[in-house]
Image 1 (spheres, one colour):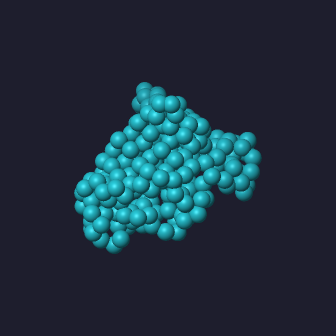
Image 2 (cartoon, rainbow, N blue to C red):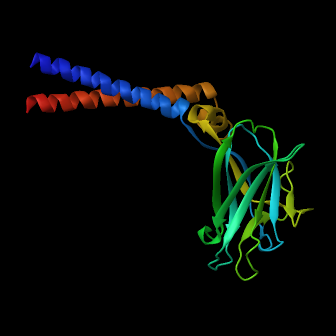
Image 3 (cartoon, one colour):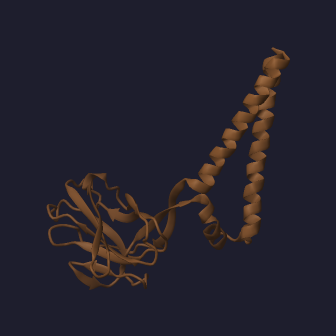
Length: 230
């Protein structure tokens, strides 16, 4: 019986150690999609995207590892078919194409954000980008639109229609890949409340993690007692 207790104690420590390593990985190492830019609300749909009706938008990336754009799209309440192409350029001299993706119009949900994910662009912070949606094979009867705001609500970017700057801005979101730990500052800025202090927020997170560790340690001990008593 003593050997059995020693063996379970070692297993208990190993499980706890694995849990701590996993938590560290999820908080400080693993990168998640983190919101950097949110241009909204929507007020009007763009013209339908077909033939020469291509729409685009310029913007400035806020962080490195830019890896996702969500664009609010509309189907006009009908089932559309055919390919839609999304292309992204980094503006500068020369202009560099970074992304070229194609998705099906049938995948678009009416008045919802459509997510476009791609390999993270490492050195994207403070750089200007331009994305473009085209559907040369679509028709006026079989095509989607994007949602936009009819006013210029985003001062750092411009809406383009048929290769010309136009009034308004598209409704879209920009994300970068970052660990949860890197999000503490943004959480404090956007949701002050009782977390008005970054130090207090860090303290709360550490306290929560310690509570989980203690709970797991107690649970493993409880399982051990039930097993040895049976």
